[in-house]
Length: 260
Figure 1 (tube, one colour):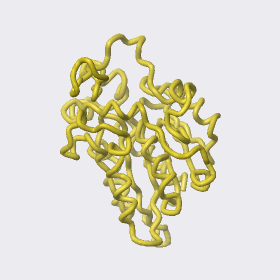
Figure 2 (cartoon, helix red, strand yellow):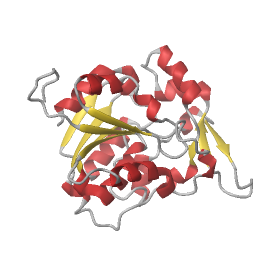
Figure 3 (cartoon, helix red, strand yellow):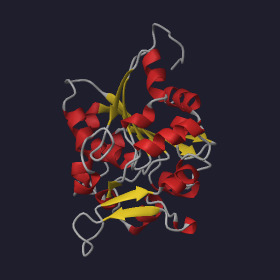
Figure 4 (cartoon, one colour):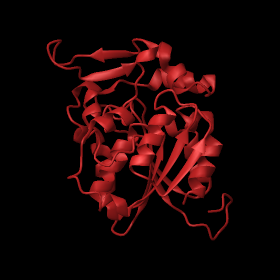
């Protein structure tokens, strides 16, 4: 697809799905790029995100967490197809949506994302899809909304680690914005499982994976492991940190358009 304003260019409906702790706000640099090219964009706030008005510690299941995306897709007019774009843990919500609405999804794009056909269904899924940040020390704050004798209800990334883990190449201003808007995410996200073991439906959806070579959160070897285990139609490489929507938004935008 041409990146200019060609009148023959097909206009798409993109649905942007954030990762853990983020929200619709994290797409603020990409949003005008899509709109200036005439595309429709929907930025979803999953349950517990800054714009959802839901306390992440009250979200008890992955289905509840991802319900805003499911509701959006369920409300699409008959015949309309969207392009789902998921970042990081947002890939879990994207794949869950593929199980439910494969006929409404034209393409799925995973940006440094958990691309697992059934969520955290096996030990290898956990190894590939859940970040291992133990080498950095105690980077998380846990909340125990049900009491200390129960598992944690939400998880947050401590502010002093945010730039190093998420935004190492990103502008300082974007890091400052993120430090204000990042929220803890529901602990239920780490137990995400979906589908019935049948990949035939989700394999009907074209998938593109965008890797991030300088990623500390979801390391490149984890991304490559998921790609090997469930090969997408196309793999595109970026030499960025975990958050190219901040560190390289123009490049990310162009790569998304070229993948269509």
